[in-house]
Image (cartoon, rainbow, N blue to C red):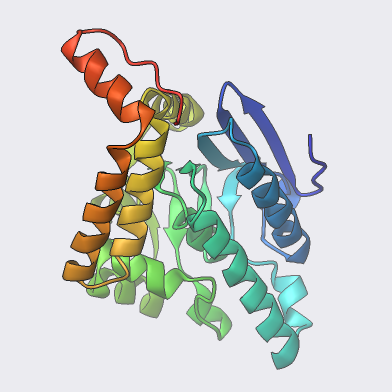
Length: 260
């Protein structure tokens, strides 16, 4: 198992759990955590057994944003490298072939919300505090927040959150579409586990390729996206999982997918 200083990482039956583990700083993201996230990504990309990742935070926060003490010391050149490294990391997370579930406990602010937006699915609770408070610090979201949020919840809602720095609860985040599922706070991880188990029942290649089609297609024109979808789904017809899935349906039995 890989050694991480700011994260805890475990794997059980194809499901990885990644826990942000700097509770004293409310899991604020800093250079050390970015290093650890990339180490995790390297490991998960090489692990064919992992199909789902659950991402959550230790303590009362998912992530309360960036490490302000670290950022206060940065000049423009250092900040540029820090922001570029953060974007590189967020892009790697967003493009993992595994399906990533964000279990948002407590605060998800600034960089924490940007991290959550790299997840494919997000589960939250009414007690969440969510938002982009960066303008109150003299900056703005810089880890993809302005770009991923607008693609998820639209121009108006994104401008509302970014321009005002408004902090919203889980119910409002759910209404806007920032959260896909609401659960009682005490059942957050239990619900994430249930969702992960449901995903584990699906065909691995189909999930991987569907994620690829959605992610790439959302960044292209409709016509380009349709061509991409056509190419990807046609390729799946050459997979063993397709044969197994359709055979199981006709034979009225549970499919045994192997990701081939």
